[in-house]
Image (cartoon, protein in one colour):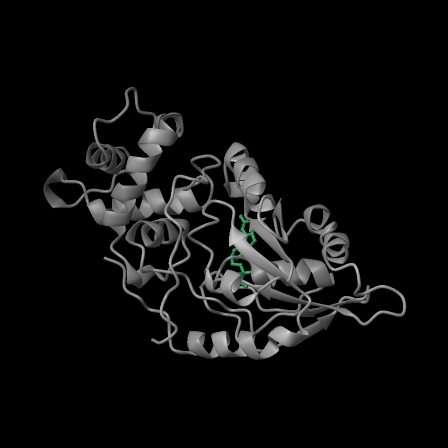
Length: 288
Ligand code: GDP
């Protein structure tokens, strides 16, 4: 259902992370707050050893605040980990990060100490470049709507004792787990041509009908809860004029509209997974 489209340079990134590891004091792992587990690659946990890690739960503006709080508690219970939800564009959110870095790596970045070297890692499109720009206070990395746009290695001096390495920090999503891959596709983390929109929309609608039925009722002005995800998609298509000749619903258009509105937050603040609800992801093979 989902094409594993990630190219071979991901393997190179893995090797580069291993190579850079000795000089890194701390990792900032950028995750999508709506799906913190599926947007993580367990490879980082394997590689980082006992180096501290800040899990940034980015795009918090799109996620359910209550579920995000559950994720923060979950991550904070892990050794050497501190989680912080934020919106990468928001300077007030990002402001406390340097202080948090220094707290987790107290022997670095102070007067007379060597700089604190931080590597930002995460899957494509999770908000790494946006976060780097906000941390640096200027536009440094290229920010784009399409995944995998960050390609050039950079080191950024934040002039506060912290040296930031942008790349190599490009991890790849784990698509081996079908459900996790489906949530990644729903979130917009996977290229448009790599999945079947109606199938992803139906799986997502199923979850939303269970967890957030009121958002669907409100957004699409439904008087009663649809009996099934396919009834929902049909109804949405009819109401929004996604029709083909003969008045039948164009399911692909209806699915794309639904996924677009979900991703842009028009349905409401929605989380696609909760701690304890999903299986731990397994590492994707390093080879293509
Ligand atoms: P990268 O591939 O990890 O470097 O991701 P980018 O920084 O290029 O961001 C990918 C997309 O996510 C861009 O369209 C950003 O504007 C958007 N984005 C980044 N951070 C946030 C956030 O906190 N909230 C929302 N809603 N969008 C964000």
